[in-house]
Image 1 (tube, rainbow over the protein chains, first blue to last red):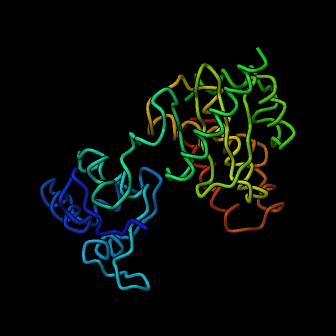
Image 2: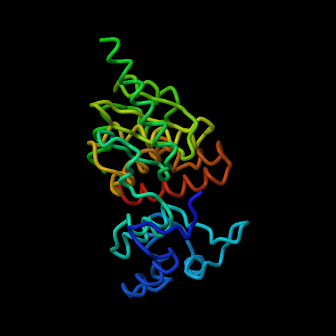
Length: 135
Length: 139
């Protein structure tokens, strides 16, 4: 399982560091960030943002818990940072997921998952082959 | 948003007149030749566009309002979206708003009938979101 402290070649930063650094750079307080997130339909308190920055919440192995994808993506938007950079820092895959063939365009409901995307690609390929056979 | 709403209203005259049901969902999907697949997923749903065809994927274990919400959200992506690259915030919000309209028509918003029929926390959250849609777009 990819952990919260996962480092990719896109960014050499933990999500907590990423959030603190770019939030301060954008001169956005935790309270203001919570307010902006709420405006975009994501309910969160400034205390929870502080928890993410301090890596306060830990999983059963003692690793910091990963913030939800939606929070990561919306925060990147608010702080004017590339979404892929934020996702990489939080240990999520890039949105331009290499596991999905480029001819498939996809919209999600509540984020993407690698296994789901593989299953979807397989299903579409199967349907396509069935269609070709029928012709 | 309003353009998408008018477009959908032409396809689904019952939209915002009564709460849409799973039967409506399948009728619309059939009429628009959208391939619907309920499968084992970790996330709730996806809409995919490949080779000129639309696909809607719904998590197999979803039931009730969550199923309807996900199904209509993804269906409206298929019905209103041109194929775009990954997550597109505006289209996401549009699909969510339209799914809320499908679940809670204006009449049920006014008399709170929806909450009486569905006394759950998730229903309450949906109702609040639906109120926001009405406040923003007047539908």
